[in-house]
Image 1 (spheres, helix red, strand yellow):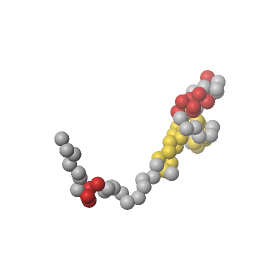
Image 2 (cartoon, one colour):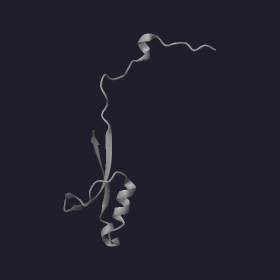
Image 3 (cartoon, one colour):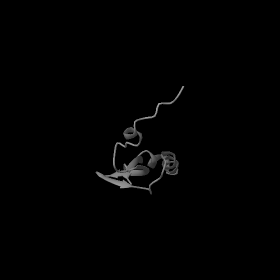
Image 4 (cartoon, one colour):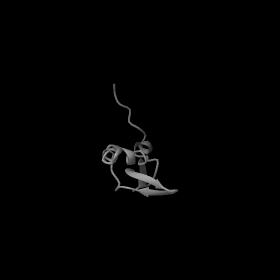
Length: 74
């Protein structure tokens, strides 16, 4: 069976004329002090790394510490 070539105008058509920005997701430990968001760590590349760092805190403190994400376009 012979492959049917696409029409010349359909071969290299892109949906956009520009490159789409890439979304980068980073994880960090945080805590609310009063009503204020307070980051407790640097940003990690994976949730597992952030969870491992959270486990280093004592059990009492760990309950108040959350893991959140930061999404940025690069």
